[in-house]
Image 1: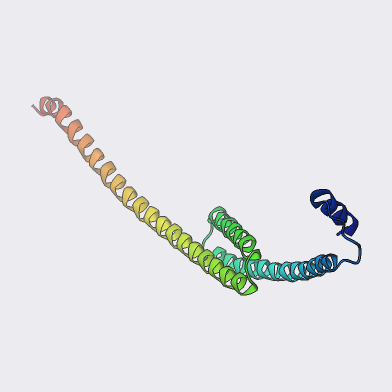
Image 2: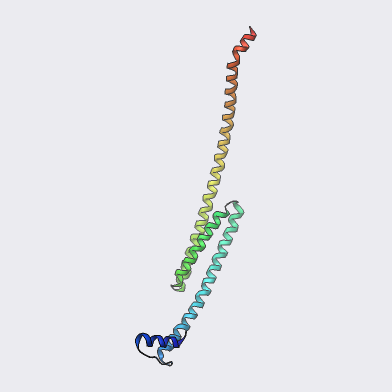
Length: 169
């Protein structure tokens, strides 16, 4: 932070000239140093939180994709939303204490796991229902085809009966 700029701005706004050795400027320097230290600490915590979240999400994704094929787009959407929630939570937590940061991150990860589990359960249920419905439709189609064949043979029999009766007489 340029102290000369601060001195000039105070003089301009308040018509009061600070000297470079004024204790107020020492307070500004201390505040700046404390802010820089807090910023580095927060950046390290955020990087660790994002890394932890990334590892947890990757593990869940590997386990899910081993069991269910064709759901990668849905999983990607959920993970993207989860990452978005984590990023929003991290931005909010940057304004709060470090303890609040850890609490909110844990809640966000838990919600992401619940969302992923719910989505996978819903998708599996939907696929099972579709398979069941398809099997039932195939069964009824076979019955309908057999009935149609029987009806067609009956109609042919009825239509050709007079001809056969004439041939027999």
